[in-house]
Image (cartoon, rainbow, N blue to C red; front, side, top):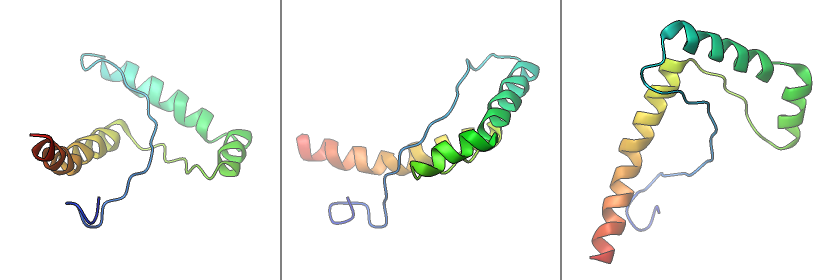
Length: 86
């Protein structure tokens, strides 16, 4: 990636929980609190640490901002790859 089109790019997997856009905020907040509560349990933290997985547990707004940022960041790579195919 760096040599082809995108210096400084890295690719790391990520996981999250998504709900439909029209989900009411109180439901989103409840799901978020439940998931973060589970992710903070010592046995969960330990299990993920053994696998070198960093638990973030950011807010829904932060997760949305991160996904939008990633879409913009990877758009350049997709356009580059498409140009190579065409």
